[in-house]
Amino acid sequence: MGFAQVLDPVAVSLGPIQIHWYGIIMGSAVLFGLWLAIREGRRHGFDSELFLDLIIWTIPAAIIGARLYYVAFEWGYYSQNPGDILAIWKGGLAIHGGLIGALLAASVFVKKRNISFLHLTDIVAPSIIIGQCIGRWGNFMNQEAHGGEVSRSFLEGLMLPEFIIEQMNIQGIYYHPTFLYESLWTFVGFGLLLLLRRINPRRGEIFFTYLIWYSLGRFFIEGLRMDSLTFDGPGWLVSLINGLWSPMLVLFEPGMMADGNIRIAQLVSLALVLLGIAWIVVRRAWGQSREPYYNDKKESVAG
Image 1 (tube, rainbow, N blue to C red):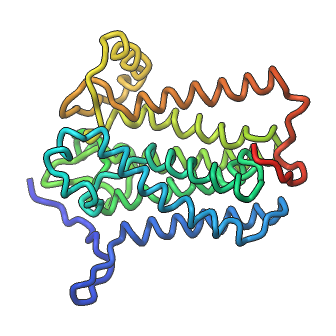
Image 2: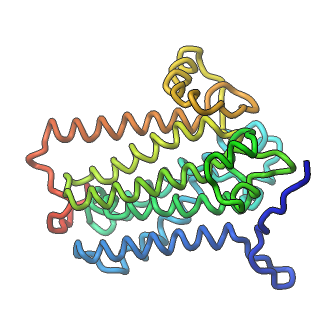
């Protein structure tokens, strides 16, 4: 089998300086998400500078969180190679870690600004999910975050354009375009969150719907991947996760795991789905009449 001509991950070369498509795509995702947040924030009485300052807080925190999360679960390697801990250009950023870092930074930010955490996260939730949608195409350019081996005929059966099929040919082997599955899932989620805005739910429910939607898709898509962070867990937990994922077996085979028997991203995603559902149900059951709606006037109360 011949090797496919893949897309060049380098967009521009200026002598020793190389600008990669990954960076361009991720930067575009951040800018588009920021534009959406500013646009919606104005409707709620927040000025543009608030979101510019928020980016300054959350982007570095997200990168640090994403790296620490990855290093922690790959400590066996990094304990022996401490010089690689800061080498993020070699790969190793986890979305869940980035989300944790960004939310921690945002929680401090809203206290300093004396604004509602739930109101702010509701506004930016569509920006986060569309940023993830766009950002996955950076993985596509780098031929990473893909799933297990498939046939070319399988990819053709998905009616994919030729450039995606060829980019999924890595050293003569075709792989699941899991980047595409997640990009499409988050794009649908973006539309869902915009629709939810019009319905005008209670404060915080747009953000927690984002957590539920993204995590649900991530749980099933993660099972196809070959680069998951893993650990060895108890048999009952393995059976639970495999049982929940089993409907996928109608069409797909799970991706191979290099070690461990539980994918950390699947476990975290499952926990976030349950957390999001529980939060919405409990808040509605215990204090719905006291909770402001998403479109209610801005309140200067952190919480």
